[in-house]
Amino acid sequence: MLVVFNPRSGSGDSQLPLFLSLLRAEGAEVTERELKPDTPMHEYVGDLKDFDVVVAAGGDGTVSSLAYAARHTDIPLLAFPAGTANLIALNLELPHDAAALVEIMAQGHTLRLDMGEVDVKGETSGFCMLAGAGADASMIRDSEDLKGRYGELAYVISAMKQLNPKKTTFHLEIDGEKRDFEGIGVMVANFGMANYRLPITSAISPADGRFTVILMKAGNILRLLPNIIDSVRVKLNLGDPIFSGNLETLEARTVKVDADDPFPLQYDGELHVETTPFEARILPGAVRFLTPAQRTDLET
Image (cartoon, rainbow, N blue to C red; front, side, top):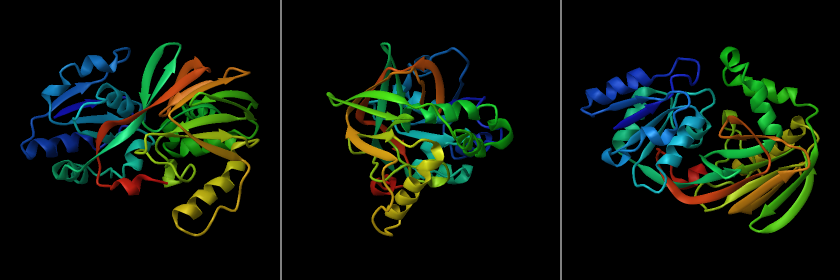
């Protein structure tokens, strides 16, 4: 087993040492590689095909980087939750308990799922959760200084600060069809569960070969709460949506995003210095994830 870990992820209370100890006690041959700043992921996985399984231990950025490096291989990947939010692990219904994760690896159940490829000025990266420009990237930017003190709650505190986010006109190209709208952000989603297992919106699937593109038309983040309520109602079969107007969702295989005003970008929780424009492409069935879940369990 190859374990690639980011020592800077999370708050330092990961169960990774116990997890590795339990693996070795079960007879696994484990190779550990620590990520270092300014060293690209592909340099850690040049011999990836020599391993039976790979573990990405870190935040969502670590998981998606390793998934992108391993794309289109048949090697199972475990998204070990060692970061702050761990949304990919949350969407895959993975526990934090080391012994439970070892059991999931022993069972060997996998799902082949989609991931996204984002292109900014000719440079490509991968994402599993979502890529976004606008209010969501601003929220992640403002949460950076709060993570050490508040952990996952930092994202909630940061969201509350986005009471008057910048609004602009976005210029989209959805599978070749142009579309403009005025709003506070665009999210290109592959997985659908956000913090605390709240669905971003309904009808998001990581295995349908398409993104769900979310147009954020609301004046501020708090006005999106009714849409979250709607998504929870749909998930629990409590009836049809009762709110509308603050979000619009579209499906696409390729998305180009530009804006009248430059907006920061984030993909899988990592804030980047690049700004709009960017392009996102779906990579159907690109990664084989270890998970206890069935495919229908991963849909919102």
